[in-house]
Length: 266
Image (cartoon, rainbow, N blue to C red; front, side, top):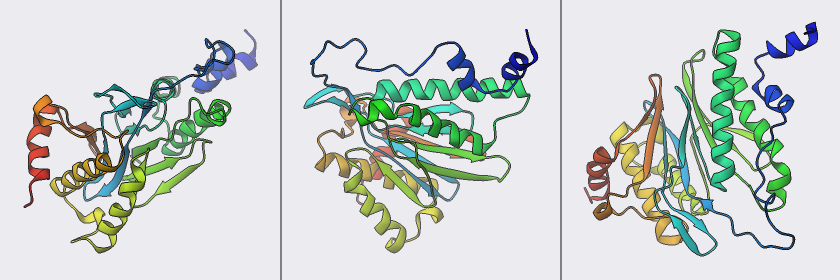
């Protein structure tokens, strides 16, 4: 094995490893017949905002294909590493594949370089995946518009980044929402941050969860692709937090009580 190959293998670049292995993102069109119209599964709605202890991320559970409801328990907030979460809106098949690649990428770098990937590296890794998917996104298939949250161990702060379908990254200092239900709740988030009882970043965990639950229920009232919570079926939004201690998902049994408190008029 020559020196250049040794250098590539020790670079810690998982994407290079995938490329040399002949891997590429799966296209939903690959197995479609010519002229066949595909109805792809879509996932909406997700949001993230800074609160007192870090960042809260939340998403409804519905996945649709055209006018059909395909699934009511879709997980739209996905762990990437111990300190990072990705919330997805768009085609779940593409988003889940991106999440798996990111997770392997971060771990491959940690093991090969004997240190965690930098926050800047994590942020750009997702951007690179989205740019590689531009062709499918521009054809109207495989489009993903994610929100990425990570705790920066070096800077000791939690960060939110929003990405468009072309891979452009934007750091968010207050709040972000994406998906078909997001237009209904962006204005509410801004109003709450500017003129609510207190800015979002000063709200405690209970206050942050209450707002997230109410926002998703509001989105579901105006957007048919966003699913409402159904306590009678033990169906609740996905809610997670990222803090200096890493990520944490609120389990279903805990969500039942949190949802009840959030929907009360107190």
